Image 1 (spheres, rainbow, N blue to C red):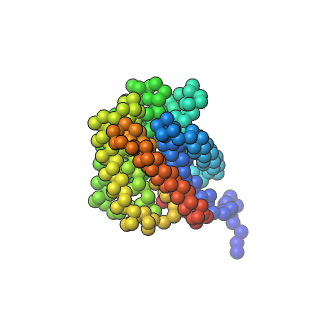
Image 2: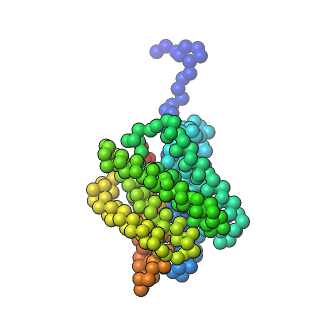
Image 3: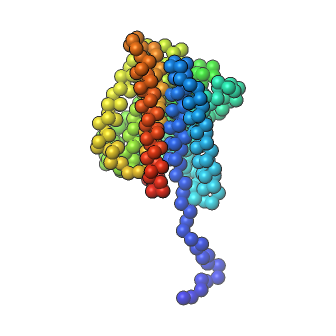
Amino acid sequence: MSAPAPGQGVPDGPAPRPFDLSALAVALGLSGLAGAWGSAVPLLGAPGWCADLLALAALAAVLVIAVRYVRALACGANRFGDDLDGFAFSYFPLVGVLLGERLYIRAPTAAFWLIIACALVVGLFGARLVARWCIRPVRVESLHTGYFVPLIAGAFVTSPALSLVGARGPAMAEFGIGIMLWVMIGAVVTVRLWTREPLPPSQWPLLAILVAPPATAGTAWVTMNGGRGDAVVEILVGITALFIVVELFLVPGCYLRAPATTAMWSFTFPSAATANFLVRWLATAPLGPWRPAAWAVLALATAVVVAVAGLTVRALPGARPVP
């Protein structure tokens, strides 16, 4: 065997594997559940330590993921520009917004600036993605419900956080942006789902995100409305209920047959967001003994997160990233 010619490099080994940012769904799901338990503290008398513990777990998860991502950037496994074009990168600031809501109880000034900064990043990310699609159109087949989180639910998540810190005008603006993007992006993704090739099995869990827009919109509106129910809340409850039924029909045909990937965590944030909204709605609705129903909703969302965590541990080290 001849020696390599002078100047030619000898490969040191296989290229480093890119770090999968969809792992941020772990932190997003935990922080979303922390928000649901946080809503249950004043409404149901739930212990505050449950929300605090979930928030700390989400913080630990996002810090571990951030360190691993920086290492992947340093060794060239990931390219920052490419990651900005995906849907999962926005989970970083979204988790910051959700954790900022919990932090507001103990450190309102720090929480204020954290929420404002993260809300700006979420907005800039969404605007950049929309602008990129305007000048560099994407194949419709490459779109899926995962983009609902940064573009639609992202606006609805930042809206109640801004309302919490007293920025009512920006909160209302974010709600309007969420409605606009829900109509625009929701229509395109729905047409893709109904008329093009089916999603690959590894992406089936992303369909759980269908319920996230109405649930997060409901929480945003109830918060801006001072915790009171009205016709808008009832409409959003109906839409949320519709998509919950859709999700139930997807269980036998999709979810039970989906492979073990990090996409399993896509179930957690929609479940937590739905619980957060329904707990707030039940507290405003004249439905008689609403507290047992609210506790049942919260317990179900918690069970979903625990079940997904158990499946993740069981699947390791065989769990695969979302392709």
